[in-house]
Length: 394
Ligand code: MG
Image (cartoon, rainbow, N blue to C red; front, side, top):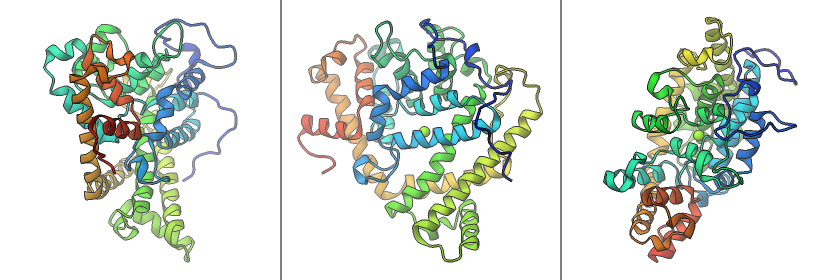
């Protein structure tokens, strides 16, 4: 069922994050005259270098494989759209949701998860004496936080974007215990504390997590069919999708091809959004959520109903088996991993190949990882060609 009509002016619930009560920024700054702290965070993300690079970074299909596939940028915009829409119905803070959604993938390497896995393997293979105290490994969530905390160079007084605690908390979706302990040493009672002591992030952060999943499940079906790797017939094996395709055909008997696909996805998206709104309201009604900190002491409340969770899981498994592990995708993945590992090895042994700003670090391996992680797909491909001669993606 469609929950209540949306209002044009946002009313915030008591449990919504309030920018006036933010836990603040790492470097104190005076308030902006015309924008709230969360609106300012969103704007800082949009103006960042890392955000502009998302347009040339892979979501599932490599950027050069086609102009209409999702990139990290359009994915992030879709997450922001879904997140804002749900936030408005739940009277959560839309601006915070938008800031987190637009920033959530800033730390992704070129070539999507293939790039991350390769870079992580390169960093893990180093001995502790090389990576020093920074924990080793590479993880895109942690890297997204690193981008907004350290790597962006825009402001005179500090490194990074100096975002609010609440935005940074939402960006750090996952974190290993070891990394959490390291972050806590640098910033006691900070954004990593919940990975040590338990607890949940803000409702807005929880919402972004789920909006991410809703967005990629839907757009990966679309991109999968567009690429020819998935067919509508195959998707009939997924009860969730079959339900909406049948619904679309019942309402529009002559519908076929791409319009049938779009209409089925549209129905699925709407229903998943309504499901989250209804089920989350139900969960929130069971607790006295007197302020934005109350949900932090509870298990996550923003969720699908158990039935939708199960159906969504079947779709995710289907996409994993049939799209993400499709031989054609795996073949590209293999080449992408080679580009990343080759670049890593070369920069480690030949620091002079790095731009000056990246070559001077005392933590050389981390500087190399930062440099590679920041690359767009096509820059990484060109750089690989420059250093190795042969084209991996002719
Ligand atoms: Mg994402």
